[in-house]
Length: 146
Image (cartoon, rainbow, N blue to C red; front, side):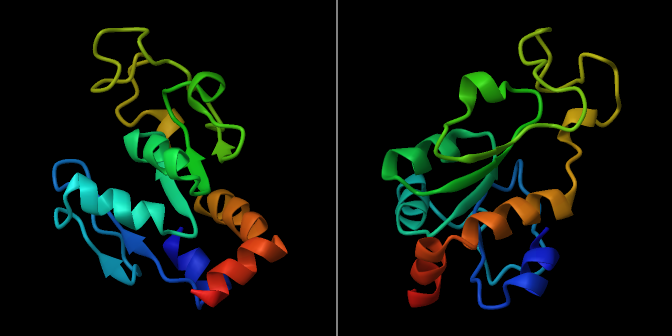
């Protein structure tokens, strides 16, 4: 997805946050901060970000507290329950909404897939959602000013 955004929005500065236990470095980011920020530092970065792209997670809820706009990629959790109307919420193209069907839903797909189908999202689809959101004149002006 970063490669697609880079192609279409070359002036966009991309910062990756995360923790080593659950994050993989994404090629093409401008600043990689996996394992290098405290929660307070991550919060400050998100507060001042023009946009936040993430899976449905605690950082998305933090971003909403600050009014930071988000594109949120959903998998097993419910868009209807966890999605904010102010965000661009991307539901899975297949399966999904299986949270808490089993006690091990976070570690093992309830339908038995080795890689849960609901977590496989199309990079072009996600990038298109971001491009459309950033095409709004006020958002584009904010990004280019920073």
